[in-house]
Length: 68
Image (tube, rainbow, N blue to C red; front, side):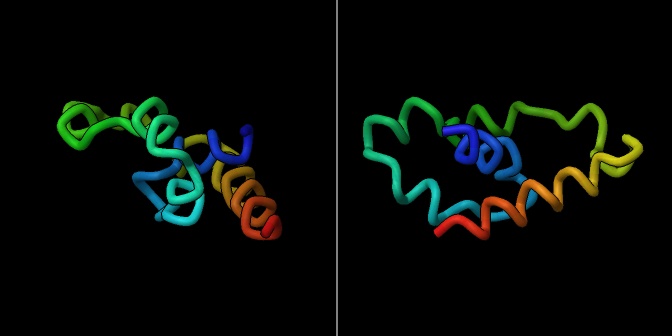
């Protein structure tokens, strides 16, 4: 579930279709925000402005992609 959470948190930056598609319809409705809700969101601080964040982000994605 942690890997899925990372994927969902980064959904605006990278596509997570395989993880989202693996969810049951009920779970998908629970964890994936509707487009009208997402449209109201705002990125307060980009990852690139936090020292070391992009490296951690890339490392997390490498771990997610390695699990099949």
